[in-house]
Each structure stands twice: as C-alpha cells, then as structure tokens.
Length: 335
Image 1 (cartoon, rainbow, N blue to C red):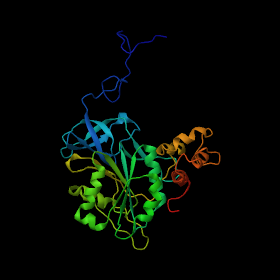
Image 2: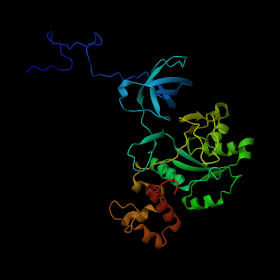
Image 3: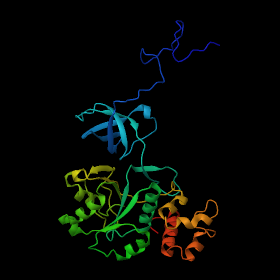
C-alpha cells in the first residue's frame, strides 16, 4: 500500500476535496503569535467582556478551544478586532494556565463542578451579623473551598450595628482567619471602604456570600464609579433576592487591585474537594499526620493527630477547627 508523508511532492497525489472551500484540509493550527493579552471581566450568554490594552473588548470563544471554557479572572489570548468599537467581536483563541481555580458544586452529591473565578489569590467571605442571620456552616464551606484552591480567606462581617460580632468571631479565633467588621454608617461615610480596600491592595479578591448580606453594596463603595444594582432582604423569609446575576471583575481605584463580585449563593457544595487536602491549611498540625494510616481523612478513630495533640504538640482548638471543617462536607449549610 502506497503511503505519503505530510509534504509529498508526487504529482499524482490525490487531494480530498473540501466542500467548504478550495483549500485542502490541514491539521496545522495557527499559533496566533500576534494575539493580544486579555483579562476576562464578565461572561454573559456566550459573550465575554475582556480588558485588552486598556480597552473593553467583546469576544467569543474560538471553535478551536473545543469544550475548554473561559471564566472571570482568566488570562486569555484574543485576536480579531481589538478596538472595542461598537458592534465589533473578537475571538478568544487561548486560555492561559491558571494560578488558582475556585470551584463549587450545587450539592455535595453533585459531581458537576462550577468554576466560580480563576486566578484570584484571596477570597472575601461576606456575611451579615443580622438581617439575614449568619450561616456559620456556609462560612465553613467557603473556607474549605478557599484552602483547597490555595486562596487566602478574609472574613468580612457586615451590619454590626444590628448585632455584635463577638460570638461569631470567637468560633473562628483558632483558625486565625483575618477579619473586618463593618456597619451601615461606615459604609455611608466611606470609612468602611477605606479599611476594606487596604486589605485588598495588590490582590485579586473574589467576594462570595449569600444574597442580602451587603456584598454588592460593599463592592459599590469600593468602586463607586461602577455601581451595580442591589436588593433587599425579604422580611418574611429572611433571605435576600438575587440582584447580581453574573460575576464581574472591577479594578480598584488607582489600579491597586481587583475585586470580583459574584452572584449570591444559597449553597456551596464541596463534592470536588478531597478532604485530605484540607490539612494543608493547618501547617501546625501537619507534622502530627506522620503516624496516620494510609489515606487517613484526619477525622476518624485511627487518626494519629488526636494523640499527637493530646501530648501537647498543638492547640486542641486547632484540631477541633480542622474536624469541624472536615465534617462540614457532610452537613447542609443551614444546620
């Protein structure tokens, strides 16, 4: 059987006709070496808004990317019309490697992962101290997701004029999570924004929290020129109404950092999280795992951590916090 190489020079080679044009088919893809570098700001029904050389460009995913998707925070390569003019459309031809990926699932038994944001390095977990009532289990789940993704958590407590933050902060003291407490008066006069902005400088921070906690209100105070719609808490159900429907990345004034406002969540499934990775967020406890059995979850009777901590090598409160975070994967957020 006669075979030809990729570049045959025989005159009698047969070229399969291409019904879509006159050019012969090829498996060689363009490298797009002249592509512009972009940052995905938001995604809306297949259209992606990207920041390219200081211009806002609307783009769509190129067919050659296949099933690979781009999300808010992704660094991408963009070709086509990059002027950002009205009614122009560019193409995203490459999604660069991510430094971090924050994921969640709808429930713990749902295998389908949803990427929340890419390339963030800090997760601001926003919760109200009242109206609506805080949900510690949801906070725990967000902490587990942050540790799993390699993001530094930041606890932001709002509406301290309605309730004290002491009880909630006491339960997270052993975790050593940095926190900020704000109230409505501080949001009104801008002092809350100044304190929060100081914790976000030089970082890409994703804001998460359930509806009605004041997440978007806080983002609006941080970036006042890009105000987003806000909602109110239902007096009957105690729940907020979704007003933020898509994630949006916004630059802080003076290009000092980025904030990513995400839609309010009612659940934060952790099906994608390997419980054995949560221990990496507790470097003071990791040496005690040397005597653990293979594939130990660190939340079972044979775990060596219990005896190691009992011998005085670490604070028992830290071990309790680890067990609580590991157990939260098996509990519903409202428990």
